[in-house]
Length: 388
Image (cartoon, rainbow, N blue to C red; front, side, top):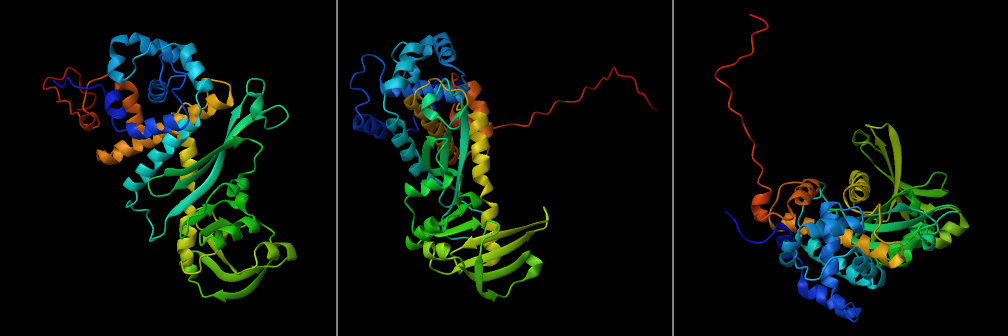
């Protein structure tokens, strides 16, 4: 019988402790800590994410019920909701943001060789944003509309492995395309975006940075066709053109040629038009790359359904950002463990199993070995036959 570490301790063992301590020192996280350190705060918040706790009182009750196991979980101090609330309120959220970014770098290295599903050598990112609704009377710093509050999660998702490579948290009033002002383009990468990011000036900034984009075109744009490339209409491609912006203002913002690809989706019957500054990719590949943009929508749906970011443990901006970055780090941690241990189960399945076994003493590599149980048929059946 295995009598080693708890499942929770095995999970935390995959975290780079020296990197976490470096983040804590960078922002003086333990400067005024008397008994509840930053690492203990992170472990409590990670426990809340893994076990789907809904409030600070919920965290306190569950951890105190397992008081004899807290030492083995790396929690030395007495857990109380007031102590955890003060820590979320006062400790700089950038500690957990920087730590999550370090985990993201490790996860991207593990998933770099994953098959994207299409013939594409370049790194592909999906850029999008999601809004998390809040109560204006409780979160007045996140004013969005007249009677609503919200925070917006701007995410750049690496399509290989569905790992977020860049996250920027703002209030709900910030437009989606304003994320270009803080995003540093990666040369040679492809950025896949919806029509909400259509801004010629910012798209030209990507071109100047030697990065590529694939974006769905807005309706009613004035463009001038330069010439057309031959296409195979049986693949769904309707046209592959080289165009220029036609209006004076758009031409000033993007003074270069741009590629226009029109694709007919046989499943939905819609005609989709894309703009890109990549002139070497096949037209069908351009359309297929955009199809993979929906991975970022699935990522948003996944974290909203399975991580604790709908009900927050604190009301200040620091507490909200601390909880969001902790949720992101837990998501990335599960992705890292899945790759390191070669687990075939999905992230959803892994989290569901972990939510029930964090206090168990089972090796992680055996925890997800699912067996098909077969029940032997009874030799003597007492059920009478309905038909002869």
